[in-house]
Length: 595
Image (cartoon, rainbow, N blue to C red; front, side, top):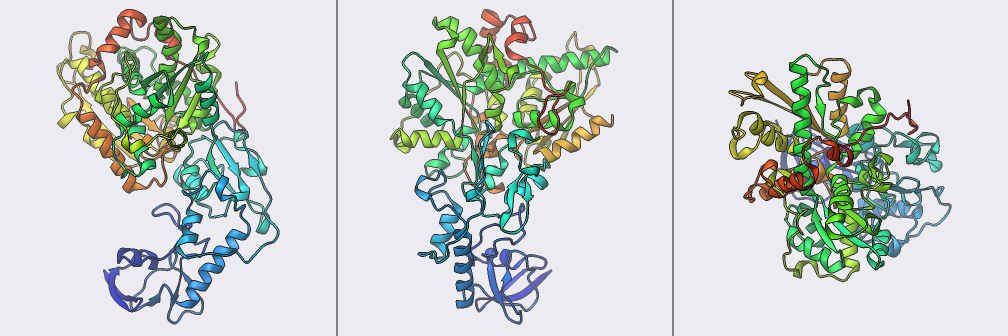
């Protein structure tokens, strides 16, 4: 049903049930705002979006008040403008204002708001809130002296991710956003997904900086510094250099990394293909055992998202056997670099420094895990987020847009389209099905353009069923069997699927979980902002990258075949088990290890 109202003397018709803010936005009327996030966070805490409504005694927060028939609204009266400026100055009075040295300088929503409403003075000075610095975590740093209490991070942590470690502690002027009992993030059941860092409008929450350790390695002539980039990076990095969301900048990224001084530029996609071979064989083994009456833990669940892994270690420690034992692709590649590749180039593994560029803050925690070491060396030495890489490229004085396209180095740089789609929710599952179905039947997966349409898109939980017809010899036990799969992104969706498993009610053989909503394209280390419009564009770019490749199934990668022939010998074999597989840790609510 449509209703009529007037905004700034302009008569408009809007859908009943929307807010004043949405009504104005839908009619190209700008109302400055700050704490609001579309479809995520709507509590009116900042009051910057106030408007004047005829008949109301006070100014109204437009993001909270529903538009009603016949309303007469003014968004820019003298009273409104004065109130906005006053509210902004009060926020600023309890803020550090060290903008030039802040990592969010020129990418700060508070700065942009000040410019929009034309603030050129700050009249209020006085006591400051308690300065709380939390830098214990390897993934996320908190600086509460910059917090403006918008509570976006609380919403994303509690309602979107369902983890619940961030809340308002204490009251009034003493309010601090953080874990209970003022504990650091590293001491609670935080998944380190980093979604809080993507919605924080200022510099209160951000990834733990790794740029300086990477620069030191680059300047150390005794080190061979090798870098790898995740599939989601190529569809998002360009945003930091003025490109529209979803612009593929793969070639320019490779050239930039070479110009920065990295000795080898590899593609994490190579070991995404390798993951499919190892994980696919693991899945087939479990299914075969299950159908022959042997021991088998089903459903099997993907293991490439470290935020998801840490979450399940805390929330469902008794269900860890459902996880695939495969390491994440970037730690697989790190392990291969410090074994297979080190031997190939005649360099001692201790003289190699491996850097991973990831869309993820949880990867910073992941590389610290003792389970991800071989020969007493970490598989990966440093993780940069997409945002950190962009800073380093700028720091190096590189004109990104002027770069020519480069190519990844071989042998660990060639990949198929199946590896590219690891960057989107449903991608790992689709890549696995492309290979597993063909192994079982000898035929290509029977979906248009190889895309398993039911699991494509941004819905929280998606499911699909693939019926096995006329399997090859050796797989006759699967004849007429329907393989059921589920895909979820975001930890709230994962919780729903895990509760089914814990109750013994899961109907699936294989489940893909990505820790961040939408998958890696909207990871905690990706450029800001990340909303559904941006996710859709990055998702489209990833599928474009996949469809443009001649090889689109992981088992078609000739360098993977060569790796098995020369080094690994067989999937799930002794060498693979040592280098490419891992185990997990039961954790309590205070991040303590449990027996």
